[in-house]
Length: 261
Image (cartoon, rainbow, N blue to C red; front, top):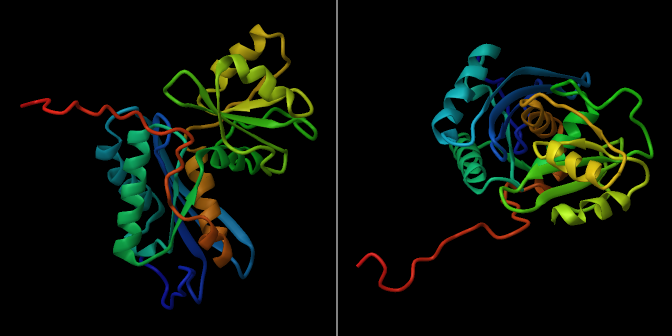
C-alpha cells in the first residue's frame, strides 16, 4: 500500500506506474474512479470505480466514495499520484463540491490536479470503452458524437466530437428550438450521449431528424477523468487547470438593500 518511492514534479513516480483519482460531480451523479498507467509498458487499467445517482448530498458522499474505491483497490491516499476532476459545464453546486474536494486532496498531498470538462469526459469514455454499454456497433466517421448535459435551465450544454474523440465544436448552451440546427452543422446523424441525451433525442425526433441514443454507465466520465490524468504528459497537465467552466453565469439571487433587517 502507499506509493512508490521517488516522485517527479508531475506526480509520476520515478520507478513505477502512475495512479490517478478521477472525480465527477458535474451532473446528478457522484462518481469516483482510480486508474493506473505504466509508461514503461504502456499498460493502462481501471482499478476501481463507484457512482451514485445524487442531485443533492454530494458533499456528504464524495469523500466516503473515495475511501471506498481506495479500499476496493487495496490502496490508501498516499498511493494517489495525480488527481483529476470534471470542471463543468453542469450543476453549479455539484461542480463546487467536486472542485473543492479535488483541490483539497491535491493541496494536502502536493500532487498535480487536472481539470477535464464533463463533455470531454463523456466523449473520452465512449471512445475508449469506459463504463459501457457504449456507442452503437458500427459507429464510425462521419457520424458525430453529440454530448448533451442538462443545464438545469431551459437549454442544453452541447458539444460535438468525431469518432476519435476530437472536438468538432466548442461547448455551447443551446435552446431546444435550436438543437436541430446545431446537429445539422455536422455530417451524419448524431449519436447522442450524456444525461440530457433523452431530452435532446425527443427534440430531434419531433423535428424529424435522424439520430441514435447511446448509453453509458454513471461511472464512465469519472473513469475517463482518471485515465486522462494518469496518462497526461507534463504539457497536458499544465494545459488543463482545474478552473470551473461556466458556459453561462450561475443563477445567483442578490438580496435587495436592507433585506433581512
